[in-house]
Image 1 (spheres, rainbow, N blue to C red):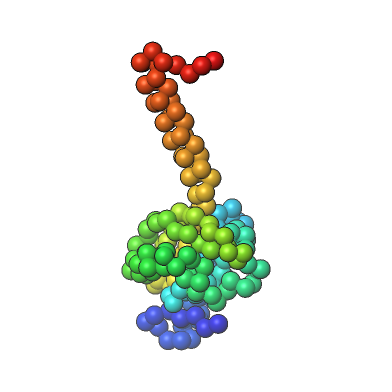
Image 2 (cartoon, one colour):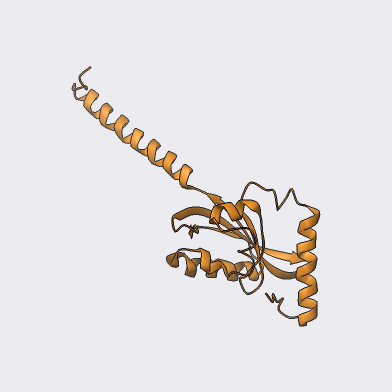
Length: 166
């Protein structure tokens, strides 16, 4: 799979990306073994490297994610927003947004995504994607919201003199 860095020769592009991948090998605890899914995309949106957590999140066998486009792993409705955020990262900005990935078995995975430029020196050579699964957080928030509604109903009933039967 051919990855490119804009504004430099093809040889220089390959050297920069190889250098960035090598840097990841030097700090494996920060990337490879990090508990949050992390992926490095090239400038075209193809996966260059992903950690174990990303492989688990997406459910693909190790090695099969490399070279695939980010849009291939997103729910179709999320692709326009993700493309917009990727463009912001390529312009040097970090940003966050919510998205839905599609697991290899087809089930949706709701995530909060941080997108940031991947730099070597001042040169942007790709985009980092760091995600956090938010299903559990949303379930807890929904349970808290439901408990608040029950509490409000109880308070209304109690203030009118009607309380639930014991």
